Amino acid sequence: MDPYKGYWMLPGSILRSDELIEDNVNRVIYDRVGIKDLAVTQHHLFNKLDRMGKTRLIAINYIGLVDSRTLVLKREVRDYESEWFSINQIPKASFDHNEIINDAIVELKDLLVNSNTLKSLYPSDFTLPEIQSIYEQILNTKLDRRNFRKKFIKLDLIEDTGYMNDSLNGRPAKLYRFKETIKERDLF
Amino acid sequence: MDPYKGYWMLPGSILRSDELIEDNVNRVIYDRVGIKDLAVTQHHLFNKLDRMGKTRLIAINYIGLVDSRTLVLKREVRDYESEWFSINQIPKASFDHNEIINDAIVELKDLLVNSNTLKSLYPSDFTLPEIQSIYEQILNTKLDRRNFRKKFIKLDLIEDTGYMNDSLNGRPAKLYRFKETIKERDLF
DNA sequence: ACAAAAGTGTTAACTTTACACCCATGT
DNA sequence: ACATGGGTGTAAAGTTAACACTTTTGT
Image (spheres, chains in turn blue, green, cyan, red):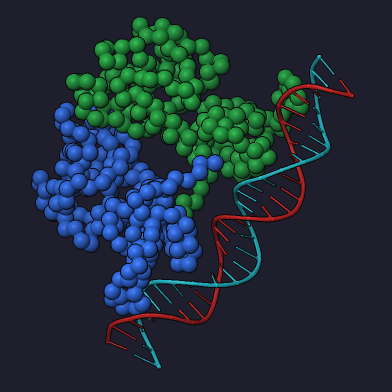
């Protein structure tokens, strides 16, 4: 609608009174990328009185990870187009959605570093260079390969599978998997 | 009501459609301890369909810090009694309130260590032994005084006021205050 | 043999931990 | 002078940061 005509919006859907938020979120995800039961995490709630014009609408932010290279967006869903955007080039969005996205990016960085959220992207095997590349994209930095390996392995989230990947080019990489258990860090 | 008769409940109030959640929370706080505009932080939302019986009620957890030694609870508010409980001796509560409290305790520990949330408890001056004691109560551990000082000071949250407190007994302690600015830590 | 990408080790700086004695005040 | 609680330093262990060469594969 008017001041925001042509702007992008975050996907979302009004909650029904007999519906879990997680189910609502997964309905939206299914609409867009066709997968069911994505693991999502709850984040901040936005409740300013005028955030969506006259009608009071409270929004809550959920984050889930999907691989944009393997999942095809259904471009026309419920009369809206869909598109992937780089985390570092988010376009102007309607209502308070840029604020919500910025918050989500902060939360995503925190998830990356303080949880094993990447497990949902890699339920099976992965290589350390793959993980490092995701860290670099999300944190928007360049990391030293040797130090990244030492630090990430010491988090004790992953284990060696004993297998190697098929190198497309260059030396094949060791394959790791996420452990079941998450050891939590000391706070102070 | 019935399966929970006589159990304690968390304070809370139904949100009006023209009301900010922060205002709603502060209304409840004002009812109980008579202070206005306490800084509170938003935490998890609880949305199981049956969490309060048949009526769908979504709850959101807010945390604020007050000093139970200086604030007097209004014991009878809206027909309910109020009482302070030790963080380490929470009684049985109705509905999913124990789950909400457990979550709040985890979040509180995180706030303590990763934010300057104590600033709302100490808008003015405080001593390091006071802060250490709060850390020990909330984290439920004993900390070495020398190491605590070094570590806490290096967080760069506080500054020396140059003043001392009036020692009740023993040597007077230096007074510190929280800085305005919060420097954020590197993630990885 | 070369190109491409993965794997590895060392040193210096810094941080954390464990630990015990001295200092300032009131009585 | 003594009781009470606050302040401080040091050494060993562990962690982080900076840095370049070698290995494995495909062509």
